[in-house]
Amino acid sequence: MAESLDSSSGLIDLTIILFFVFYAVGTLFWGPLSDKYGRKRILMVGLVIYTAATLFH
Image 1 (cartoon, rainbow, N blue to C red):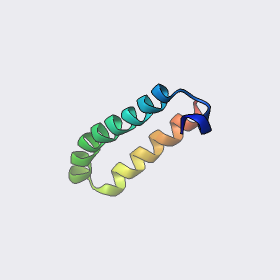
Image 2 (image 1 turned 180 degrees about the vertical axis):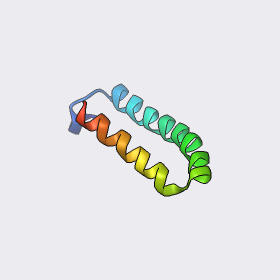
Image 3 (image 1 turned 60 degrees about the vertical axis):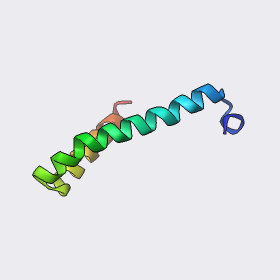
Image 4 (image 1 turned 135 degrees about the vertical axis):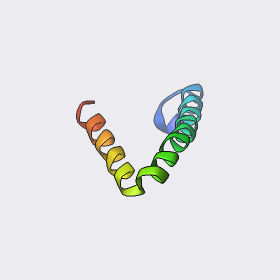
């Protein structure tokens, strides 16, 4: 993977680790909110955050 992305293996490992950490934290954060307010509202909030982050990047 490091060769095909022209990167170091340490950076690839860090990326994968951070993905799983933020995925776990996101599950702990968004899960209870989804139970309280409903899935559709929480998915829409996530979509708005994602779209804003994409546009302002």
